[in-house]
Length: 427
Image 1 (tube, helix red, strand yellow):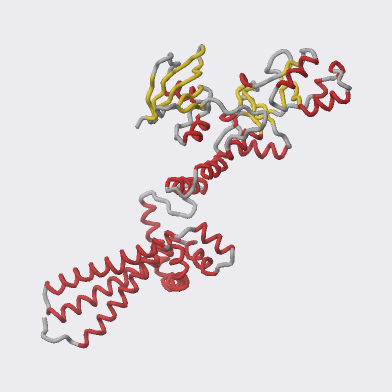
Image 2 (cartoon, rainbow, N blue to C red):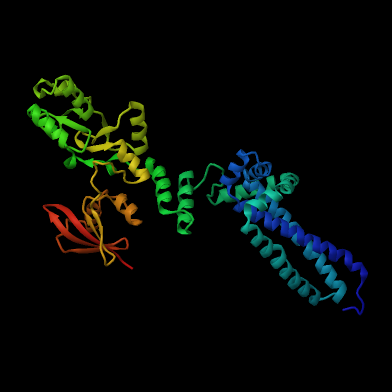
């Protein structure tokens, strides 16, 4: 090492410092522009924010953006290392020592000041950082565009040889899945409460849930036999908590119409209270049937189009399976809706030891929503159905099964139907 410092080395050292600043700029830009929220930038652009518009133009083609950033970053890092090597050769002379010291020094400088520091700063405020550097980065992308285009073609051709499709139309996750992931993440971090999460997820799930999964089963439907005496029909209709009741003749599968309470009251008024003067078959509204495979979104659209609130669900053979109402679909979004005629929802009874006693006909979706669990509902609709599916048999009272992180104990059974279970999370 020379006894005196050569003043001519100030210029290359200054260039090295400048190149390190440029490297920090590229590193911070890469982190900020890849971590920035596209949705938030879109909203800000809609509010007239010019900086957000520049960011959106940049991230619209992320492949070209990343190519330009990496190209610029590698250029300045390689150039800084080359100049640093020449500086250390001037200080220590030719030999391995100069190269070793230059490599070690530049590795530390690049790692600390050009990588970790700027990326840490950018990730803490990605949106603000992205809007600040967007004007400069736009010119960088423009200047490097010819080179990055060639790089894109080469990279895509190489990845295509390995069967990888990186085109814009090859997204792995749909927009709905991205929203679900984001809302679940924010909920786990405590920034979104359970009610808001369930509301958003319920709206997104309408396209994935079929009516058969939420319908009231046929055995639980209140129906009226049109062959009964008129006063008996009226008495049963007035006792019901529902305003719409199916009318059948001879057997419950033969639905001939829907009796609406308002129509009944109007007919009674017109008949001056004479029940025998009412023709229920003429009074009944035409029943609306829907297939069990209809999604909730499709059924909701059909309700709006037909101005209906009530649909009878049938299978592929036309047999009655159950019914679904507009309220049932809305409850999948906003949760249970109770009016003055509804009884409190029964079937989920938490116990002091952390377990939950559940009626067998409680749906898995309702239980998951009530307890914030994640029991699978792909193979069964009700809790009893899930146990039967997993056990591959109809369990006896007292039997216990463990799956999906829970212990299921059969409490009651009526014939071939499980009517009550005890569910305990396995910690």
